[in-house]
Amino acid sequence: MKKLIPLFFLTLFFLSCNSQEGLKSVSTQELKVLLEKENIQLLDVRTPKEVQLGFIETAKFANLFDADFPVKAANSLDKNKPVYVYCRSGRRSAKASEVLQEKGFTVINVLGGYNQWIKEK
Image 1 (cartoon, helix red, strand yellow):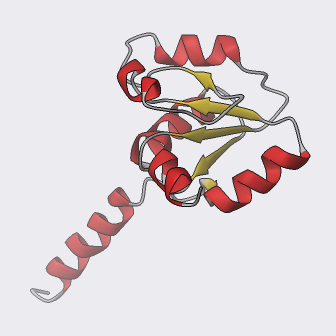
Image 2: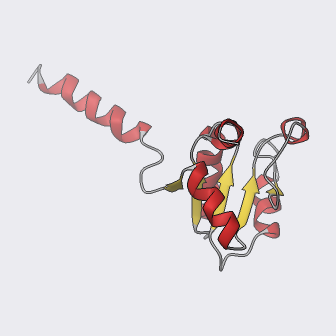
Image 3: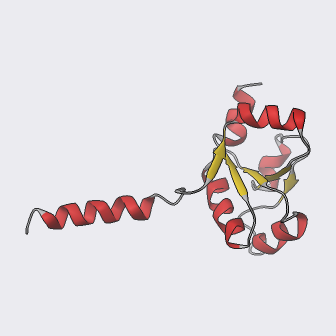
């Protein structure tokens, strides 16, 4: 019984920390190919200060830290098309993706975010 308790908590830990389970994602290289071939919805969820340092062309902007993020993002997007979401490194975009999925959007997280995009330029 004593051996099962740590196993139980370890299992619980992995289940709760895997918030990206079921979240579709693409690499920045895959995103570049998509941007060349299609007119996709791209959402940048970084702060205005970060956006001033550079952004991916065609991106729409909605700061994840704004209290009205869900409304602002939803109003600027089409629910009938997938939404590709990026931030600086990929963590905030994963969180934003969860929020948008709850609103009924099909969301794809961009792995590595803008940092990875710049590295590959």
